[in-house]
Picture 1 (cartoon, helix red, strand yellow):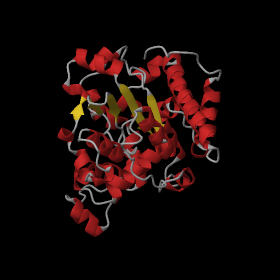
Picture 2 (picture 1 turned 90 degrees about the vertical axis):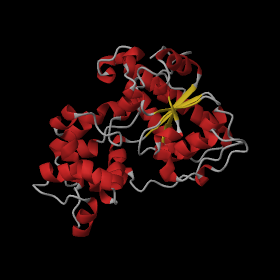
Picture 3 (picture 1 turned 120 degrees about the vertical axis):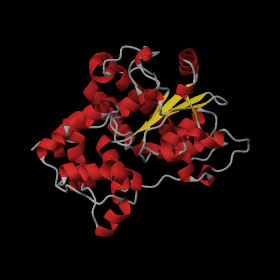
Picture 4 (picture 1 turned 90 degrees about the horizontal axis):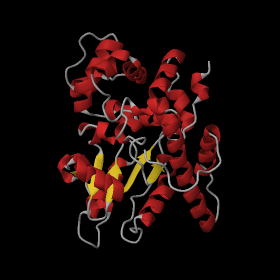
Length: 323
């Protein structure tokens, strides 16, 4: 990642994470102070990534030494808006449906329609967007240098819980047939699970959250193929050590961050970001989700996602990991 412009704020790595946590949850302040807090929060988030990437580069680069080492396939999640000079790296289970709605709306004529008018199912159709990896390497480098680049991240464990609920507790034939059956077969001692999601649903058969965690921490899982994007590590989707982002939003401060980003893009009077609802999975409820997961598997899971915790300023969940 290119060197940051300007000075770095005087925090150690631990201090940076604490400062990010404090600023993220400090809400009752005036409008002027709030704007200053949001700006400082952005600087802290970018500084943390800069220091982590440069301090322990091998941990976060996965053997990649420059942008040239990123394959076209690894740029699958980058949406380009040439009209406004925007690149959005979307991360499943981090407000990506609504941000994709915004990106679709921006490709229409002004006055822009309400993003909520866009069918949420339609945003998952890839040909709705211009993807970064459809351009030549030279064009990609030019766009990354000159366009405004942003992403949104989330507490890694809460993101996993959200992915599990959405893909395995609700009706989803694709995820049941592609992943659920194997999870039941290998981790729930069911040698011949129902072949269809409809049949499994009628019988009340679902992979448990613990089965899902067992699947993730099994070393054979990633040896076969990269994680599915809904549970792939966020840094592996968006490569923050090789691409310098102009804005890093968090799900936990989504409303404020969305307003700040739209203002930065000079779109605050043209686009209204969809309403932000409270997360159904809170940090307090994470303990109950993990109550059936052994301490050893919790620690192995943290190792898998430690880079996301460290890069994006999320605290290590000691209540889950310290026996």
